[in-house]
Amino acid sequence: MTDKKTTVDAGWNFDNSYAELSDIFYTLQNPTPVREPKLVVFNALLAESLGLNAEALQGSEGAAVFAGNEIPGGALPLAQAYAGHQFGYFTMLGDGRAILLGEQITPQGERVDIQLKGSGRTPYSRGGDGRAVLGPMLREYIISEAMHALGIPTTRSLAVVTTGQPIMRESEQTGAILTRISASHIRVGTFQYAAGRGELDELRALADYTLERHYPEAVENAANGENRYLILLQEVIGRQSKLIAKWQLAGFIHGVMNTDNMTLSGETIDYGPCAFMDAYDPATVFSSIDREGRYAYGNQPYIGAWNLARLAESLLPLLHEDKEQAVKLAEEAIGGFTEQFHEHWLAGMKAKLGLFNVEGEAEPEPEDEELVKELLKLMHKHRADYTNTFKALTFGNWQNTALFEDAEFDPWLQRWQSRLDRQEESKEASQQLMRDSNPAVIPRNHRVEEALEAAEKDGDYSVLERLLSVLANPYEHTAEQEEYCMLPEPSLLPYRTYCGT
Image (cartoon, rainbow, N blue to C red; front, side, top):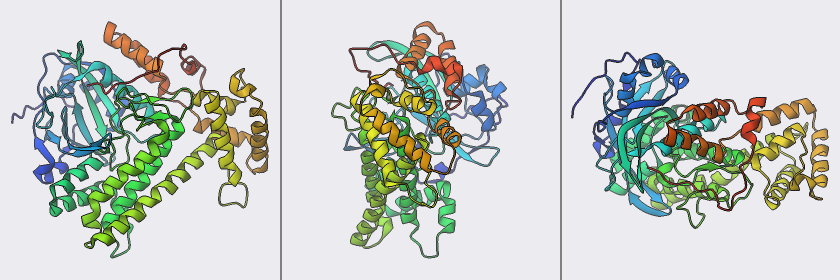
């Protein structure tokens, strides 16, 4: 391996703890250099929070690092191995077009992965060229940063560079590399990979590493003799139940919830055929390859539980030496997902409607969930816009739409107002709760496409930059955001996204 060092004084502070695991989990490999790297999008605020010198990284030497042409001092580039169920079918996988540079230790003492996506072939490429094209990398940048602003756990995007090398797909396209930031890239599929090899020591080492990296307090606070691997499973279930509830509350559709796209850290990862819902419909699918609706909006909680069951299967040898007892422990843990998800979802929906618990009541009123379900039923009936409906309720703007003119809406409105009157909190407090829970803007699909088209066809990044600026504070409800709340023109064709590479 070559080990070229950058001369940029960028504040890199690398550690490489993942490389201390068995080398079955990775292959040491540098990115493949590109012809003419050019930095086209850079997240200066994120860079500074990571302890990086944003000014130093915005020049040509920064572009060289983000393209993989220069390796920062202390980095130890590697491609990770993992497996996964893709649309229900198990296969051995790995980073076919990504290289982990290492783990940046931030000024706050946090450890985050720095990964280059689209950085060339690896041993796991399976015939692919290991490269990525500009549009999908910009899409991930937009959506991941919007998710962060919405308060949804997610990987982040630090930079996108073009490579100066055309990429052949259906047609010739612009090559690009995304720099992705993540708490880690440990996936359910990483555990499936370890379990599939059948070597208990390696599986245990991975589990111990994950506990230490992501759940040290849970282990520290556990009673003596408590099953640490059961704790790991329970903690991951807890984070994923909260994460998927946040997806549902925001109307986000991941599009490809394979087990290799579910992290142990509880972050959203891999923004391929993803999008936000306009008209409310639980059957909504945007992915061009999800022809059966496996990963439809309404199915996401069920797929989350299914994926976690695959994690539990992988952990069985660690949960208990007796297989029957191990299965029992796993089933009990997985059984808790549905209840946890439901609690997070209902609490979020109550907030979107400005509902607090009535004084003296520890639990939500039974009527609360019925209010939510009746509203969603009406929204589905009239294909009401998900985000704008809750925004209208927040500000009392009863627009001339089919939903608000429906004869069933007025009785629902009266029940909702009556419920608000029964709680101790003021109407001002309820509206503030709604403002804080209902975003003014989301990355509307037509706005995302508009930004991508301007960048890809004309090299114009101003549309993208303005979109990112508007999405950075989605709960501000400013006049500037109003333009981005508007729905697209009606189309005879459904919106489709692709697993772009």
